[in-house]
Image (cartoon, rainbow, N blue to C red; front, side, top):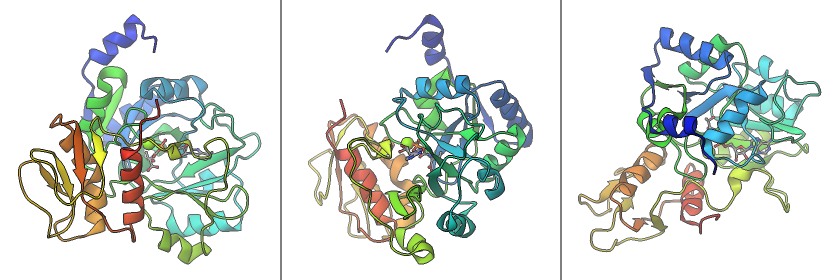
Length: 330
Ligand code: TXA
Ligand code: MG
């Protein structure tokens, strides 16, 4: 990667972090209107936001994240009505939006012709991923900025997502114009992505809303259609990866090996983080990324991970763990 002097200075600089109070949100909105980068909380994970109608602003997201430009971004808007300006809603989309927005669901659909969106944000695809987050900071920021916000998860490309402001500042330093600190994210896992671009609802990414809730609204979700290019490039096999290699389904870790555990039976110790001692998958989801980052900080070559049940939110948790454990893309 070619970094110019400005970039190097920015990377070394400290991030500017403000508590997400009304004045700070107004300032963040002005930064976004000028084409800047602002990290903000959603109920899932922190997002790295820019004006989705500006190619220049969106280009800064790809550069800051080191994200390949073929990987499109989710467009965040404040309401279903706003979303309708950018996507073509069919009946399934309308029903799913009514059931889950505002909330942790992203809908992929055909992009509306003439939609005022940077084509870089949608990676030149004929489709668009839309989301109406529920988090108060996200809602207020989108409204104050008065434009749609393109926002990937606020982590370096391919690495563990950020559920606290300090994760974002650790990953990006001064490369961002502002980080709005709203404390830890409640869900802790990214939104569930459902595509209705070809009519049939398909699960593109399991996430914070379990499959069964979605299927209760739109019937059984189809699997991803086979394709040579990644349809949701976040579905690249290696993703969410800590520095250490992950060893999955391990009941007994090696001596001094960090261990991510689950449930009352899990071992205890200074190198252990228990996702949920009561075996609660909602709590486990909230803790997942923060604990992966914590265990990674031990600097060990590997992290052992106990088996996690596959039902409910377990589908999304196991998806993230499998990708975090997969051989790296490069
Ligand atoms: O919870 C979330 O969804 C967070 C918060 C910040 O909203 N965002 C997030 O963004 O997880 P990101 O960029 O890390 O993941 C978005 C995923 C990527 O895998 C991307 O490929 C996929 O959505 N995506 C975006 N637009 C798409 C499209 N038009 N068709 C298919 N997949 C798309
Ligand atoms: Mg991401």
